[in-house]
Image 1: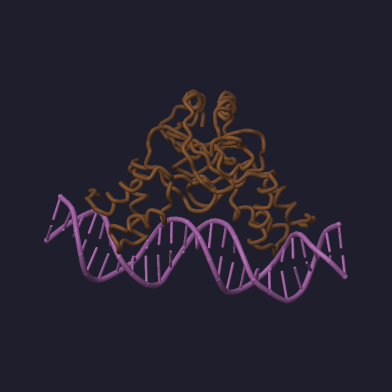
Image 2: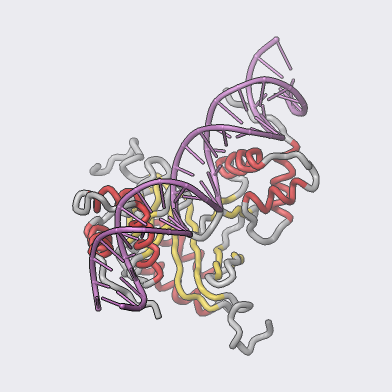
Length: 133
Length: 133
DNA sequence: GTGTTTGCAAACAATTTGCAGAATT
DNA sequence: AATTCTGCAAATTGTTTGCAAACAC
């Protein structure tokens, strides 16, 4: 009985999330959307984010530090979390993705998806590195 | 200047965590330890868990639902999270672990570790399955 | 004795919820 | 008209912190 109705706020949240290439928290998105719908509330942000997650339109990342983050990119990819600056970057690892699919066959529980977080120090936070920063 | 001093509470927490094969939350451990040190406080549990994590003696799991969980098993393994009952199980996938190591070489950020969560429906929650439940 | 750890309670951060009114169909 | 969605504020959950007393070295 629960029909989904259009909401401009929800559209805006999703649009903002897709536009940003980083992985914003609910509060980050709240700031963004507030520039357009100045009286939007944080509750609406949270409600719509969890709705979009359950619809499979976006993804939630729980990196272990601070607030959850959200990702509008549904293509298979992984995440790198810097344990110095806390940034979260996309990480494309095709060979790894293959291995995952293979791995899922061996499992007796039915796997529907997976999230991998790589932890380390990002190149910006690693001062003694002679690479093109 | 910060020397580590022995604490029976910390030992007990670690012991409990290693004994349990599941992945308890701070509150689960609080209940466990309370049976032995009846007036231990939840703050002590949290303080020691984060200390043990930073010492690398245990691991923290943030599965995306509810409280963080903790794992005393340091051997390389992965985790399966049931999105029906919320249980978290160990998942050994040797071929997958190899792929991870390979993947880490391709990354320009220095990776120090990784955590993978597989999501799905566990065999206990999947009723229409003709396996030995 | 010095420095670390504890229990307790209060503080804090992130997220969820109840409700009356506004928006969508 | 019926139902869903919103803004607001209060409630809830998970975790951290300040402090005086207890403990370890």
